[in-house]
Length: 151
Length: 163
Image 1 (spheres, rainbow over the protein chains, first blue to last red):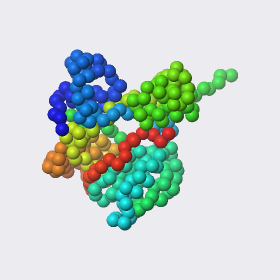
Image 2: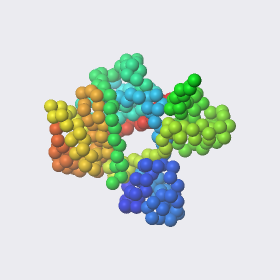
Image 3: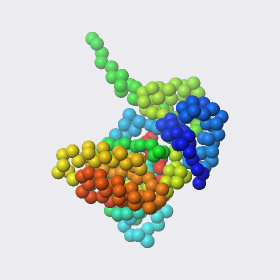
Image 4: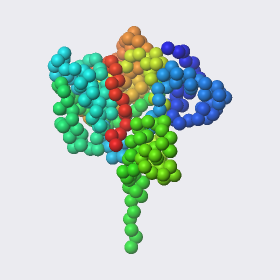
């Protein structure tokens, strides 16, 4: 693990808000020359702290107004292959996040749907038919605040 | 007669080609517009225009760098699922307001379901997590129940839209 200082943190904060920012603009924001900013970004990329770039879309404007988080328990642990479950669940288009977790559920899933009946279809036809699936708990997302964790 | 035009609807309507463009951009944010145009089968100029239109209407909000907390030494990620004491009318507001002040909380979500609020915590190690949990989380107001899910691995994280 590489050590990072406050200037790196400032760069990461900016990049979390605007992944397309140019090195010259980033440099100006944190008080560095363009080449110094570029070198620091390169170093953060090599250390995999910056691990790619992603487009941010407005799901609601694209017609996906329902987001549901599911807690999934596997029915018979030991008899189900985790790999099989993970492969099958990751292949469902509406599933946008799969986390293997420790606690009262085995997996945490994020499902994006156009409306509640679309969600019900995904739940019944896709999720409940997964290999080894047991108890499923659904919580419909009402609001979300994401904050910069680079502090 | 004055004809009513729903501009908002026009702004948001996208066709099959726009959808293909977005799909490409979601799969690989580093693709050049020329590459996208080639793969979708439209001219580069037309592809530029379409992307520009979707940026203007807010369908494309922008780009963000993916930052890996583990590579920064934040090894422990815990989802705290909180049930609030709803006999208190302002429980949600007061809880969320206090949760915002905990700097290790990087996500606050509210739900319709068995869970009321979920907090995502990022900590350096278990000792750090324990400290946050005992000294900050348990002091938040109006908690009636709390359950923890510790993230072992992110199996898949597209975190986009199924186009």
